[in-house]
Amino acid sequence: MTLHNQQAGIKARLKVVRAGTAPQGFTLNVDLNLPGDQVSALYGPSGSGKTTCLRAIAGLERATDAYLEVNGEIWQDETHGIFVPTHQRAVGYVFQDAGLFSHLTVTQNLNYGRQRVPVAQQRVSLEQVVDLLGLTNLMDRRPGTLSGGERQRVAIARALATSPKLMLMDEPLASLDTRRKAEILPYLEKLRDQMHIPIIYVSHASEEVARLADHLVLLDAGHMTESGPTNQLMTRLDLSLAHGEAASAIVHATISGHEPAYHLTLADFPGGRLSVPQQALAVGGQLRIRIQARDVSLTLAPQTGTSILNILPVTVTAISDDSPGQVMVRLDATGTPLLARITRKSADALELAAALASGHVVYAQVKGVAILG
Amino acid sequence: MSAITLTLKLAGLTTVILLLLGTPLAWWLARTHSAWKGVASAVVALPLVLPPTVIGFYLLVTLGPNGPLGQLTQALGLGLLPFTFAGLVVGSVLYSLPFVVQPLQNAFEAIGDQPLEAAATLRASPLDTFFSVVLPLARPGYLTATVMGFAHTVGEFGVVLMMGGNIPGQTRVVSVQIYDYVEALEYAKAHWLAGGLVVFSFVVLLALYMLNPTGQRRSGKPGALS
Image (cartoon, rainbow over all chains, first blue to last red; front, side, top):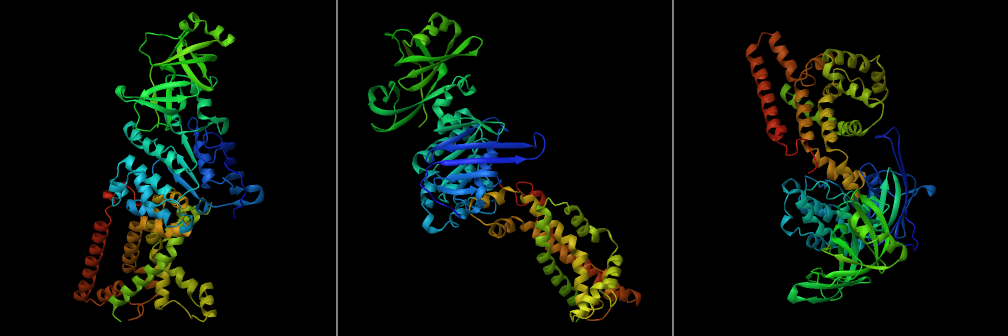
């Protein structure tokens, strides 16, 4: 039924054709190569084929002309007539609206999938899942009595309890309001950091993608337009992700020390050192830091006598129009890309075009950072 | 055997057969995209509109000694079905078919695709899913189907008269017995049975609506997901 080889990673060549004219008619045609132990996000506007892609990977929708391999296990290979049905794929699927069984309690919902997995294949205990998603007080409740956020946490736990080899999440936060989203995101980050299960996460919210995804796939009209590390794509000025108010860069940094007197933590990355609000992690801990383009300003010489703590030497690698009055500047901080959104007037005054041509060092002043976990 | 026990036996047996036959039929009608769905739905609904005498008449003809099904049952050594209890069961199954299939079909349709897909991603095979998810979620539909199938069979008259006749202990059910009493001008006896049927029907329907309050389902449709 499944063949094994030593290939790590997720290979998904999928073609799904739905007959008819748009919006019923639709063709998904993608060839994805995703990391086998990280979070990949499928990002794109609605109708771009994100959900169809996820359903095809789960086997809920049969892709014609398909090859699907998950860390060496072949789930589908139409040229050799292999199609593992959904219930035989070690997949955990989180639907947009939870999809809990209304006739079962939370405990029974969690056990539904887990009981159907042979004991030898169970790598995640029920306690672990309940603990990770904070469900201890909900175990005897019926889905109908839970809030939207609680339901989604149960749904994530239910999928996780089957010890999946791949988690598929279809916009699990889309049906929740901002407060509920903020309530779930830390659980998703814990899931990413503690469980070491590859996750494919569908979203059309750049905020979620920035927080959760290591790898990013951009989909449009059923085709993959870009695929790469999240930070690379988020700072590519030719892509819409790198424009507008929400444009930002991600920095992966290691904690190098604390300044308890000032409630600050020092975090080092190849481009320099950042002072961030104090973190509970010890020295050596990893931080994922988001720096928004609108919080970065540029100077030609390092400033003294400024309240800004984080000043990084950078080179200008690209300049692009953003809005009529503003330009987006792509910077390189010793290998880590950053974005700065400044006025067109400042760009001219600083002669940034010359800095781009000459490769001269300029200084990025970072007014604020957000710790993503 | 009295008319009452005969009636209960006929209705009970008919209901059990209908639930067994109706489940796969209703499931197919609820899930199929086949072009035959319309035809099958219309055939299932026919007993709702046809006069029972028409159903009884054609059953009598086809199951009779010269009818195709009659010749089949004779060839199989079952004899002829008209004017037997077995014949009544066959007639009742046809007559009450829509009252069982339609509630089941509605219940299956209300469940939708998502619970089935959720169960598949949780390692449940299609058959496993049917028993662990579909049946429990369709419980209100089964309750309605059972009660309607049973009660409708109890109220059957025309089909019985056409193909079952009026044989005491074999085919003389309550509705026919009432007819007999009225013909014989024994109104007091007719009252006891007729009144009994009114009370029975009322209690059954009351129980159905109290156990299955359509207006109070949390999500508005039976078996919906939360």
